Structure formats: C-alpha cells, structure tokens
Image 1 (cartoon, helix red, strand yellow):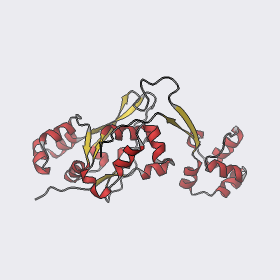
Image 2 (image 1 turned 90 degrees about the horizontal axis):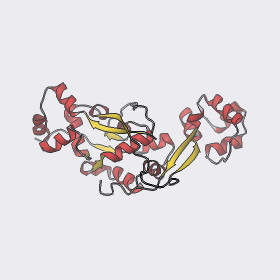
Image 3 (image 1 turned 60 degrees about the vertical axis):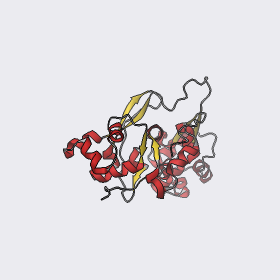
Image 4 (image 1 turned 90 degrees about the vertical axis):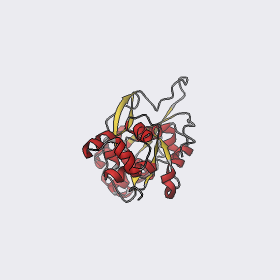
Length: 256
C-alpha cells in the first residue's frame, strides 16, 4: 500500500500581488535569474517530480519578508499568514530548517520507522532532518505533511542568520542600485479605496493620486506625503518602498 501523500507546489503569485511586484522585480531583489523563479512554480500538475534549492527559498523569504508557507503550498490548504523574524537584510538573512526531529519526538517514533512508513531512504531523510540537504523534493515534503498531518509552518522553521545573502560579494562599489517606488496601488487595493475617494478625503489633486498609483511621479513634497499618509492611516515607510537591484545570478538553473 502506497504511503499517504499531499500535493505540494510553489506559487509565487499571491505574495507578488501583495507586494505589487512581478517576477522580474523579484529576480533583481533576490539576485536570482527570472528563469529560476519561473521554473520553481511551473508545471504544477507534475510538482511531485520537482526539486527546489533551499537557498532559493531562503532568498525569497529574506527579500519578501514572507514565511515559506505563503508560497510553498499544500493543495487544498490555505495557511494563515505567519510572521517571520524581524531582520536587517543588509546584515542578516533567513535560514530554513525542517522540524523533523521535533515531529518525531512528538509522535514518539524513530527516523528509521519514518523511513519505512513513507518508503524513503534513511540517508535522504537523515540529511533533511539534520540540515545537510541542499534541495527539497516536493514529493517528499508532500509525504511528510501527510504523515505528520501538519502544515508547512509546522514542518519548517525560519531562523535569522548573520550575513547578507542578497548582497553581491566581490563586486566593485556601485554595482548595485536602488529603485524607489510608490506602493499606493497595493494600499488602495487592500483598503478597497478608489482614487477619487482618496483625492476627496486627502484634499490632494486627483491627477496626483493617479500618478502616484501608477508610480509615475518623480517628486513628492512632504506636505502631500503627510496628507496622504494621514488619510490612509499608513506610515511613510508603507507608502514609499525601495528595491535593491543587483547583477543577476544564474543560480539554480538545474533545480527544477
């Protein structure tokens, strides 16, 4: 009899929509080639055959500040947003670990028993449990969440590590650039506000609101920023965001 399994797959679209980003923008922030990001989420029907590099997942968590459970999904299961540790991306990054030993202890079973029950090799599961694996098989993850009847947030834990994985070590000064953008479109969508309502409520011209929503403004005076933040009840850091652009890294082309 085949061991139970759940379909596990990667879907970046929900977090990209919340961040008002696209794949190309995420690629510059994570220093991963767009092809890598496309490959890890394509062909959902055959996701059981896919292997994902842990470093890629860590970069996405670090760059987006979203937990793994917001883009590594179990079919039919919608996990609530899970907070991740507060980090300074210029000095720290997120590390991903599997909680296999903890889950085994809770169930009172051994790694050898788990190996037998889900029909996987001991060496493979030992590497996952002891954080020696470089890649994750989504097929194995599907078996583990089914066996322990757990969520992604139960199977994985995220911790803060020192070092900036998003920086481009060894590149000369000036190799990276900062792109400042207005996050108004996502805020309006989240608050279900129209541009007209924001214009009327904030006292700012409709045309200015339209250009801000489209991120098509080159300067913004402090008074207008204050009026907009006060009406929307958001901090300036929620409205004005930035991306760090790096030379692309051809990392993980063979990880699908």
